[in-house]
Length: 397
Image (cartoon, rainbow, N blue to C red):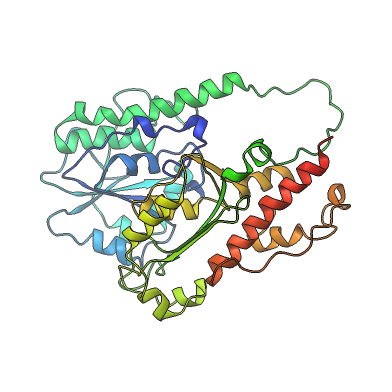
């Protein structure tokens, strides 16, 4: 998985992302259900536009970051959403720099967000008729004239900034994602057999790397200083404060604490299991990321539970080896049922867990590898990696 675009590496579109500076401030309000859509374009747009901020949620009336964004006297806010009284933004763009608020989601989701948030209903409303058909060929829109979020931003920013050709560069990552997705589907077509096939034995979730490159596996956990989203003084992004990594094949371990740079959230110590003096006495985050980059190797395969840890490193300006394996996604595909939390799944790998693996009694989860909750989670991830590999060895003739 690519930590930046959060797409599988075989269909990563990051090479096509432009960087487009704007006078316009952009606030993208993404419906919570849209966040995990693998082919959504809101995150893509936020990666292209430095002046864009992406927020996820449904209720925005008490949001301090949104209220602050809408209170900028030099950039009065407007809402991009069709409806009664909406002006055509392509024909009558507002004068001067503005804060453009865009709701991202299905049309039903966007309608409910605007309907349930008076703070959005109070904004001047703009809309437009797309001058050309959407190039979003892998997701069907309700009507032919509808376009994706990134295409809407292309048209609207072109009108607001008076440079429509400049913002056509936003089509590059969209077309790259669409072309890669279609090419991948062509190579791996999904067909429904006319007659039922006999049941296959369960497919093990182990990639070949667990067998062939065990020494390259690097388990990683990141913990954050995370303010409640609506709390006073809240930061927009969680910041990395504890980075830990372990190579199960060699026993090497990395662990460093980064001092928070935006003030310590009152709940951080409780959630991540570190004392306040430990966090406040940590190194600079840039130094932690430098040391982590020095610890990694280009051939490492970063193993995580989800993508939160890699996102914390990437959002903080750090770099990781390009190969990434999401244990949670693999476990979900293998089990084909809800697998619960990391704690639940790691515990399920104990003695006798899983009828197909019952003869293999591997014992309980080992002790934490380092301090804090990160050390416990790192031990669980390492336990999963070792258990999967041992079971693959046991299942191999």
